[in-house]
Image 1 (cartoon, rainbow over the protein chains, first blue to last red):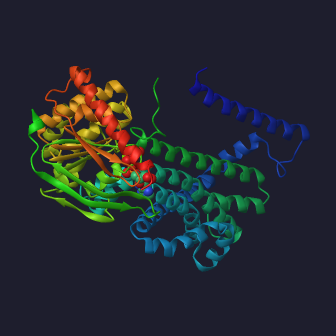
Image 2: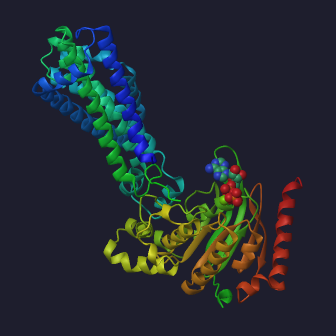
Length: 260
Length: 259
Ligand SMILES: Nc1ncnc2c1ncn2[C@@H]1O[C@H](COP(=O)(O)OP(=O)(O)OP(=O)(O)O)[C@@H](O)[C@H]1O
Ligand SMILES: [Mg+2]
């Protein structure tokens, strides 16, 4: 078996074993579905409730991507601003850190008081997602080769040229790394906000479905929604990894495969 | 041969001193004239301030004392700089890397293309325009770096130990390439090195620097019209190398004797 096949087959084998064990535990102990539904029931629920779950998935994905876009714009924009002006950086950076270290679970209920629910959820997702983009892009912009920077100076490059031709390309791998983290975090942020809104909320995302099903003791649907959330998270990560690969494959050490 | 072509000074350093923020006096009281069309080497032990002097010459670093007087134009395109490392943009092709100085000057890519291709051909990289730096060997990267410095057709080429990281065979080859370019393009070359052999092989004039603080200790002329493999093995070459080594030893000994 070659390396590629092994990396696909091994995790799938683990999955199959886990599902089998899960099924066995449920059958042998005769567990009722409201304690632990078996994998078969979760799957059939997924199919039966598909219209509801699908529209919830779309809602969650919509919020996650909107938050990710805003996090990218905000994170990269702020990093550029900080890079151009020390004054602004020193004034604002501590607040970016505070926003990041304050647990979003604790902020969500407050946001839900002051903002309409969709806006609150989006804001939550944005808060957790923008910081890795900001921190990584800042690091990237400051990681420019000093000699290259000297070379640009020698050839009389303008501030704009230094930014566009040197700093941004040098920061790109870092930026994409930040985005990859932000993708997962945006999903987490969206889920946390919806959970905080709970069944009282008017939302219709997957997290809301989970909360709602919890109140109604519809455990199989909870599992089905959870499964969809995981799949969404994996898909987002895969998408961003693929974009990163496309952008860096020609030149960056992280993306090139060495021959020989 | 070009050895007689050196004209009046095109740039003079007078009483140059550089003290870094941490208190290190890198160079002090350094006087140097660079004559038009000459190939001059700055030879000195590691840490004696060669790079610092070259950076001051290039305007990349401000001297703490003294002044730099250019007697010819030294606009960005008139001065080429080659670092010890290739210092290429990894995200850009060889073509784009060589295009950089022209791009920064606002030139059009299509209009510049013939000059870039000609420059790449000159350093033997005509077939590698679309390659990325990581796809090249160390010597090829260095040649891209030289092509980039040459593409503006500078009058002055400043080189900071450009071949130090290369193996001997590649270094000899690039030494010959550089000499050919120098003759062909009639540039002034200021070449920093800590190799006695390299400085003797390449330059018409060797300026020996002494360390702590860096200053000019002595000067040595190398009057040889032909520089080729034969010269490298000649008794003449060995004799000049011996003289240069002695000058270097004296320069370094001067440091140890307390003033
Ligand atoms: N940015 C800096 N800050 C503080 N000290 C420096 C700086 N750059 C150089 N120095 C000091 O100045 C002295 C001369 O350094 P320089 O790089 O010019 O030496 P060099 O002759 O080029 O050496 P090498 O052959 O190793 O490249 C050294 O003692 C070094 O420690
Ligand atoms: Mg040096």
